[in-house]
Image (cartoon, rainbow, N blue to C red; front, side, top):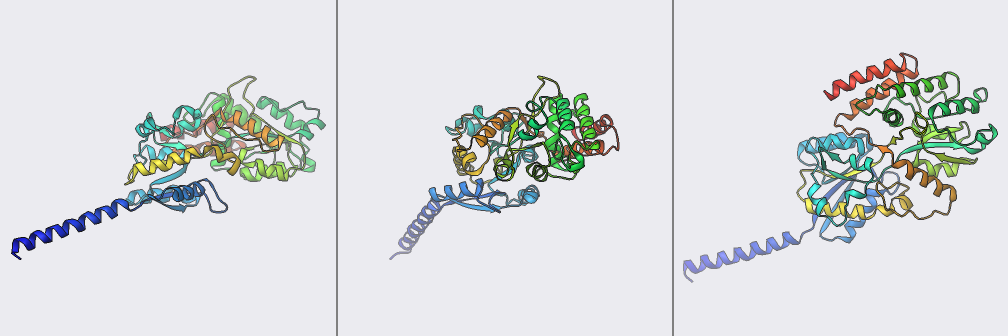
Length: 411
């Protein structure tokens, strides 16, 4: 065999090896990393749907990781800076702009425009706004929740009050009539805690008064803060609202120690088990009769990190998540963020009526922000609320100070 023939044979053999290697690589499954808070205590949305997709799609391997809520943002920021971020992350909706505004989330606008699964027009305004930045879409809502007014029907009847209050001034009057502080019974309980929970419950009041996260110093918000302060001072409101989270304040209502509670749809199942009295749900009171409505927007969003090496496969997974939206309420007790979702009857008239009221309230839910410096803005809001309710400064001065802080952040 001549040297040339030997060389030709070697080149042919190397070509066959290279072709075989490429074929193996092409047939190897793509790995997608998904991070979320779900699955730590019980099966959740992200872990359940990720496992299903992994089983149904042999060309894609899903590596799912549970990241604690308090660690999710910082852990993802560190991973992104180091170049090893996951492909898909599920963030609390006010945290989403922190990433999308900095180019850390993949712009999905064009992919969604071509999708036969994801239609932005079907989403409620609040959830859709929470995934947008600078006119572009960087994610899809995962689920949404909000708050409304639970009230004890039995106690209202005993007090001769015909139905829930329509305005905040009516609520304060009803709370005074219902309260029996000498026996540890209060007219109202809610969370005015010095953290995001406090902002979550107070921001809708600012929004109903014509303001927003960038305009907190409104007359209506100051008036409601004054009403809240008076209710606390006179024993018409639960005395530990400044330190209680939403879970604890709802527990006060469930135990029969408060006639009204501002809380969310995530409490329905618990309330059905714990509350040994007749209760119902109403929309949040407005500032004035027939005035503007608002409510807090809770829930998480899905997004694809911009440094993913597999954007097409990651988008396929997002589409699968969206296709499961009809399962959110019946399987996980979570509210959908879009219209057109048929919620099957549960067999409980009370639960079905409560879910219907929350769906109505969700129409008015507005996002916290959106702004990449939301944590600083939120801190200014809940610190103003606490300083006013503890009597350190007047409600107007507290909101004026918060506005100055927020202006500094925005500018």
